Image (cartoon, rainbow, N blue to C red; front, top):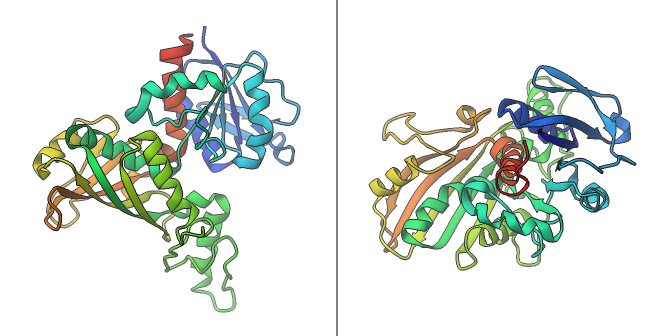
Length: 340
């Protein structure tokens, strides 16, 4: 007997990826229901070799369903997640709504799988921010070996992190650059994104950080270790899919770059591509559609006593969102629900 699974937000980029990954990984589901808002009612979405028609999330009865994967944003989640949880359906939420709630576990299975048991307090599990998820996958095995003191990270985040509207804006602006009179003014982003980079993701806080930068700090501490110091600069770049990060790590103990490379090669969810030659590293183009978090450019930082630099790339719609949510569902099934 398998699980009864709901995917809420099934017509969006992340919702569609959730359905794809559930099918690819052969998640033991007897039934999968695709939910969307009323305006998308009846839209067809793919689930493996099947086609599902979306149902209206408003008024949907979650009773009897085991797991609900939510990709509907914070406002809608605030309305529907408590309904699903109260009906006995465990919610795995991709929005930021519950990430900082002490009664809701924030999970990256390769990093803090044991925290899964905390789901029972609210019947809700939070999925981390896309940029945080890939970084902590790369940092966890290094932290276990040499204890991380401080992380300085600069992100290069693709427009798909801003949803379909972000991807459409990059596409239309790029086309408009070549057709006089068809230039497209910024709407989704603060400035032109085509052939440009924008050092702002989300709103500015009083500290001068953006909310995206604050998220990376707060989430890394909750997932990895509260003692780790983190500072970040988050930048939007004209890439459709795939987030990249330049990460500088300072450790308590010395960690040789060769040992770090060996550790990462054995780490779950990590793929090391690190040849010191032209093209001997991963870029967003290569990571699209892949499950792995790619790590390259591993090298000693001679400016501090125990430092390393590395380059980290991942498909933000997969490990940064949909894949991590499905992995949480798998973890929940294997460790807690044990059904199917």
